Image (tube, rainbow, N blue to C red; front, side, top):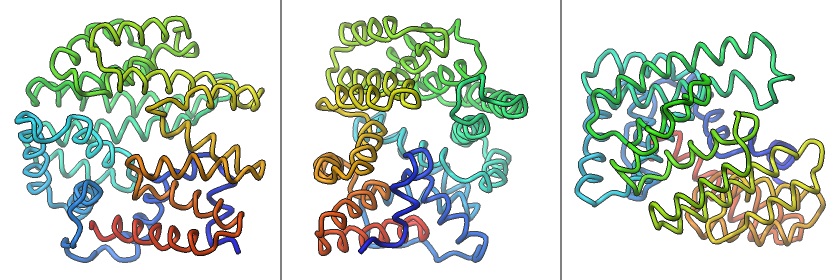
Length: 352
């Protein structure tokens, strides 16, 4: 029997059903109904916990703790004890919060002399900008949507520049400015920003991701330019994990850009992107396509691998995999994942 949330999860795309959106909905309802949330403290000691406690600190207005915690993260990163992409993921978690967090970000910036608040708020505002614009092509996007998009992106730019001034050798800032340049059609400095980021921290992937995205045809680039960029990154960095991830993203962009007119063609591109380092959105979209056609075993194969490769607490993956288990009569397996999904949501709500 399908569990609560089946329609919400499987009959929407990842854009509406992904981990962060589900978390946002839960957090918004909780914070509105009960601002006096439980005090921090749990038995968890994993990366999910590190991300969740940052959100809880922000909501409670514990801005000094936020600065200290993020400062410690940068210090660990510089000492080689914390991976750059892990530190980035912590900021990314803050960036994808609900719009009701805006006042908390503003208060944090006002109270802090450090650059972390500016970087986090800039990333949050840029996410809000993309949300305001929507995911349609320009011809199907209203003037009001564009106006909101440009306003929020411009505000984000101010924060990114301020963060870049305050945080020494901030490759993360350079990467965010590349994404912001795409939003505001100011891409002439992208190559310089990318080179700066690679020089400051070649182990951080977000600048390369942002640059690849900016080369999409709808942003003035081409697939040939994207392929050439990937080949150049392979030569410059020698990082084949990054190269494989970029290749998978290129396949995702190919498929996503033709999805509405040619879903089967999109599926072919998504399947091409299933390399050793597949892009998570590609995996989600392809699993959804399989499930809609009742090819649940194919969806299971994809999602089980995703769960084993670092998405143990991803709400979307847990829910989607459970529903395919249910569809094939694997009730016990599905029930276990639904229980873990509920645990993941609880952890987010309570900052665990």
